Length: 202
Ligand SMILES: Cc1cc2nc3c(=O)[nH]c(=O)nc-3n(C[C@H](O)[C@H](O)[C@H](O)COP(=O)(O)O)c2cc1C
Image (cartoon, rainbow, N blue to C red; front, side, top):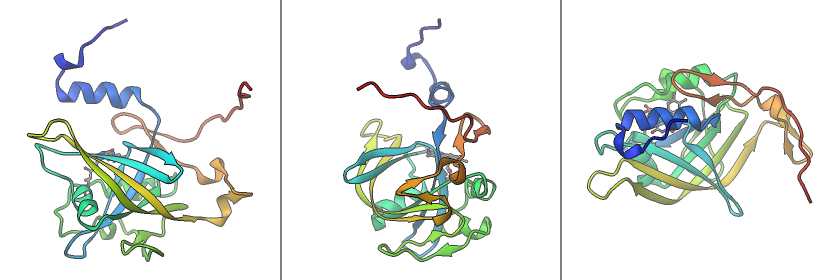
């Protein structure tokens, strides 16, 4: 067993241990809108549920030398964003949106995704996802030291769900039909594999 103090490691080495250990990670494709009206899209796998009452999700958006990514800046300015679940049909297109484009260029156009109006917020989503969630920002927290924060943790409340009726049954989502894809480390991804049941103790 290796025993390692993260304080002795570089940022890159800690990153590799975290993304190799905490697997599989769900992937959110997040759309936001800039002050100039450019529709931005990018994938994030530091993504999860933080509360079901009220329904809330978290996104952690890393900074590079203290500089915020477009998604974080747009969310903090407009307080709105749309989260889409990445699946085996849209993953190739969504991967293209991770390209490092300047803020005035839209990854949505680059990846040939189709914008669709939201019901409750002014940020559009895209059609190419079986689930999308309109979110309003509840909190944004700078992490990693007040001088040069390393990341923006965003907590959003889901204000509207959009769920493809083909994957919906009796108030539940069919995991096979959703076909969510998860992120491992490097360029590796995983699909839903074997599903098994374990009864929970009373
Ligand atoms: C599958 C996948 C997952 C990613 N997850 C994250 C993440 O959780 N946090 C992050 O800061 N960047 C993540 N990235 C990188 C961002 O998507 C990338 O930096 C993107 O260009 C940011 O776009 P923006 O500047 O328009 O916000 C991920 C990239 C991919 C392909």
